[in-house]
Length: 169
Image (tube, rainbow, N blue to C red; front, side, top):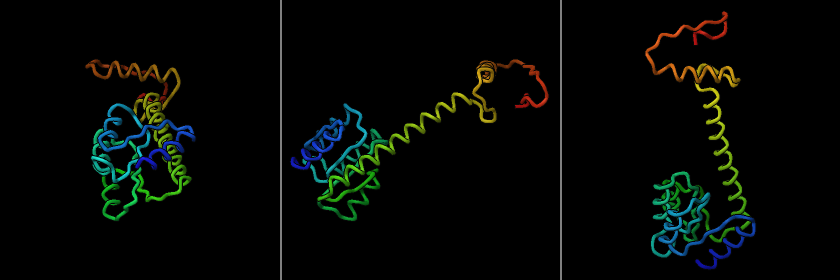
């Protein structure tokens, strides 16, 4: 609905969010194909494709996209279908704009935590490349590099060192 779209867009823009709007399911899909969004707010009743159909299609191409379904015609079956198809939340109209802003902030915080966790896992994996060997010093990183170069070969390798230094690993 134009009034809901414009109101939500205005509230979100005022709070510093970048906002795109679509009047139909087809337009929403077009925008999703050419852009990367953090959150998609979808009304179940839309011109053309329904919000539930748009939800299914965007989740096929971007399973990590957070989708919030909005409807004035809430029913248990449509809520179940939306959640089964990957909706994060299901809001009934009329809703309190402050409630939506709290939900969006919660989603943004959750997404930031996911990105941070992924980043830390990648960093950890890079710095401690072998399951049973842990280390971040330059010396151990040099050993990890040497192991990666030697491992694919059929060479015999002599490892020397003091007792307790981890030669067996």
